[in-house]
Image (cartoon, rainbow, N blue to C red):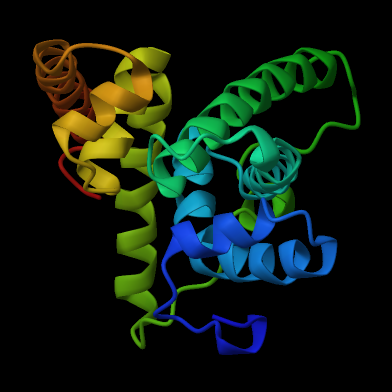
Length: 210
């Protein structure tokens, strides 16, 4: 198929093949389709992992750049989406390191914004919910869930995000993280229980209100 024949129905494998054809122009155009197709899922994954919208955008940008550079060596023994997810997870781990370093620095800065201030309010795009009260309640619950997920150990958080928020199969998660399917299920169970306990503690402290 010619470059002009690419569409939403074009398989990832065909686009990857175009990137590996040696034609720089074809590769650039094919990769644009791959970015368009996968950027939303990767941004969602990155945001759930790092908990910061700006950092998540940087993670995804770095992930696609790494994927573009790595395409010539991609052997296509896994799906492109699986390979890209692995890259995004690695970049998210780097993002978490940057966040921790930045927070250590900000702890000594008198100019650091207060939690819940303007800087925090920019992290989430506004909801389209017509009810302001519902929006506030949903945002409060969402923040508590995200805070509980952020407290999980990294190996638990990755599995919870991939399974419950991205609906990946146990087999794919095992492939991504290089662990057995039984390990995936065990960590997922423990992650879910930890989040439930965290939410219960938060609701108890708040008197049961969202």
